[in-house]
Image (cartoon, rainbow, N blue to C red; front, side, top):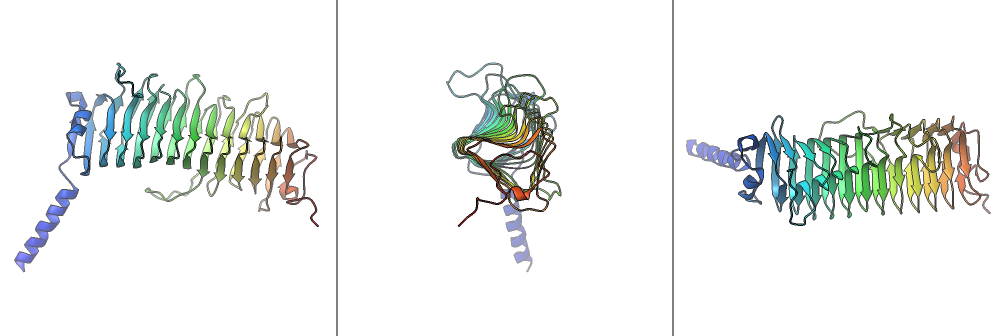
Length: 388
């Protein structure tokens, strides 16, 4: 019996040791190199590397399966002062052709020559980006491309050259508990730029960007609760706010793209510009779609609330569009808006003009719209004109 017990103990200890190898610590302040340490690892054996101090180097994670980089208190990854001359796009941390890689607990700084602070590409999957602070004037905070998949959790990104997050090339990204902000009066900025990719968002704030979320080239964004690695939260709201009045669009949806608002509330506060035009809370154009239920709330737009144009379509079942300086809902150039039955009904009120549609566009479901004072000429009470 003692032999059996000893054998079981040995097997357990061996298994634990294999699953929990001796920790690897890189002290960049002590002159050690994170890249040098990574180059010595077996890329197919799970490993955890803890990092101390400030690492001033371009970190390349290529072909790894099961790597965790854990920043200890104050750990920083900084773009070197000299740009590489190998012709490659500059990214402070580049993760390519890898899977099950976690980057956790770092501040990352880029310069204007960088494409991004973090790049994830070439089919990488299960890339976990947690507890990060990104700043600098590289074009992107994070860019995900080439059919890759990543999850962002508690990422605070500010002042990008263009977008704090870019998602392209049929990539898929989950975003939760993040804060994307612009604190300067720099160039045109987007909180998220999604082109031919998919992003799911919950519990995230986008602050003072010229466009909160820009969706193009057939991209899709779901404002939606989803299964998460983290503790259940009672509030999953997504907020796009604009106290600086620099915003043009809360969300812009173009070129055959989709914004889908599911079981998470999207608040868009004070979007648009005072001169109106197509600026406002949600701008949908060029054959794109807005699918919104009771969880879309647009308030205090300086421009329009929702602007539809060029053969685009929206459904509003219980949405709220109030206090716009121009129109609550504008429908133009062969576009349509449908208000479905809901409790409460769609609320469009307190706008300079509540509803506007041109002669070639239609708003249906007028019986499901409450409080609107100004009605467009092509407002149908039901889903269609009278049927035979």
